[in-house]
Length: 494
Ligand code: GLU
Image 1 (cartoon, rainbow, N blue to C red):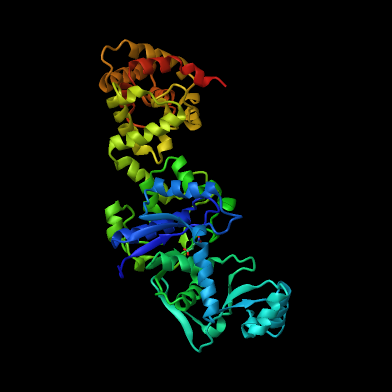
Image 2 (tube, rainbow, N blue to C red):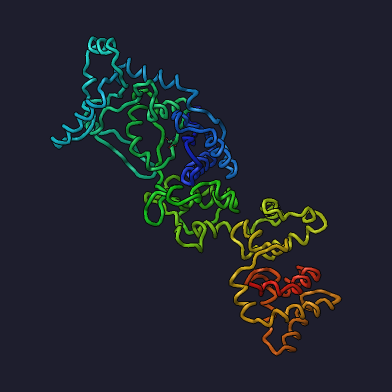
């Protein structure tokens, strides 16, 4: 079909799936979905030294986790080396590319000379003027050659209408002949990428602005190969708050999609957040369902200016961009409780605190626990860290809770076990009954009710805040409450 909308995500498998790369995949996917198009996954593995199996698996796993599906592929660029070579050969035969025998030393000398003469630095086209005899002579002498694309010698400019950046043009005279095949016979990215996009009938290319400068040269290749030029949209780069590129080296694991999977983020929250890095619906909406996102998405609403990944690595308060935490929290708190339960189950299995009863006789209790706690949580991990006391006795106490609600009132060391005995006498262990006992206890001791209540919260949940304490008593149940309050003394030990 001539007007088919076909997009591609062509990662180079030389590392992890970077959040910037994931954003590229997501925006291409969205555009394909919106226009009933196809998304092709093409692994650009021509750089044999840097491509790894591990990286390919990581990229595919990351896309699967995000829920980004593709219609064709994965294709592997190395399977099409012959296509790339044939294309290069064809360009040479048609006089659109030529063999260049200049050595590195020749090129360095030309460069020096151009710099000294304050001329533009670029290949001077010397080898394009070689005669057939001269070429034959050099080849007979065994001289190595690259293949260079011959930029048409025309007045004016080559350009295109970028869907994000508007009209981009460059004067032909400012573009120097560029290498498309190395001296070892290996075709280079600029050519392979175009040949593959032509073969895969790609109609739209959405990629990062780091490729903007390649585009002009690639358009020359499309024209030389007699193929229609796709629509281009260059997305802003994702930078940190200091306008630096984000990378594992400078920012650590949080720039890899896998980190989010392993640290309690929901895949859709991640997709939702990544879309907002450099794109907006034109209003202040931040939460989008899949359908809403597809409906709202357009290339024209991609921002021109850099997208800021608002992560301050020296601020321990936020493990990643606070907007992402808020979006994740939104989904955690509003999603179907059973769906949440299946996510939390995985975290509990990893933490070694999953009990099959939570899916059987204690399911109702389990779901209610999630309901009671999720209002304060930001990631799935919170259920097994801050929320661990709900499921296991071996929880850690938040130091602030210990200091403020226990150590500040040393008498609680005796009082809480005493309160335990009074609660143990209750026949019905409801919020109302436990409240009555706790308040009477405070009165008996002549203290504010908050003192035994907050102390109990620390001992029972390890936290400084949480749901209503009487709900906590009732929900944790008499056996656990009494046992933990009886052992309150251990939290006072050094
Ligand atoms: N393999 C290239 C990259 O990962 C593809 C760029 C493109 O979209 O053309 O940067």
